[in-house]
Image (tube, rainbow, N blue to C red):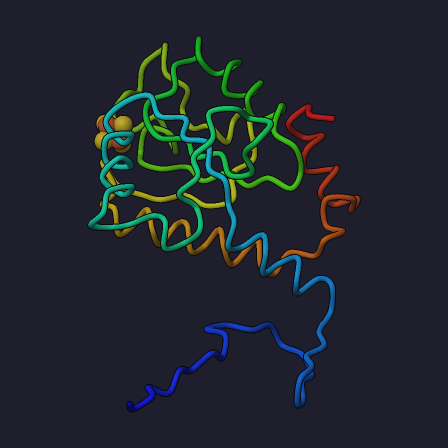
Length: 184
Ligand code: SF4
């Protein structure tokens, strides 16, 4: 019986120092690797961009490849807020409350023209961009963005999560940024 050689080397390993039977790296890199590959998105979908996101979740585009298939509809069990669709001024306080209820570390992905800038709805009732009320990490442009763009946005968030210092959230710079939004 022939045996098939199996390559058990990991697909990705952080920078470090290794030898026969051991591998050493820093805590930052291990935490970054874990965060990057286990994002729990909270889809805050209000209109057509949300439908495009559903397509991104489908088998064709397979969000699960990024370790992010576990959607959360509870802010306390999510670390990636994905805002997709038109946000009315009436809804803005709700979005802000959802953001505030998420534990650190957390990231925000803003999908589509409406969430980013109000889009075509330059009216009295529509918020002209969610960055007026909460900080945004990555913008995905388009109306509606294609699933490939959403995946690219997720990969940008992954890069942030992977490279972010585990102490960034305690930094003065981060606290000042939040305080500009009136968030303690
Ligand atoms: S950006 Fe376009 S597709 Fe997305 S919610 Fe607005 S109108 Fe709909």
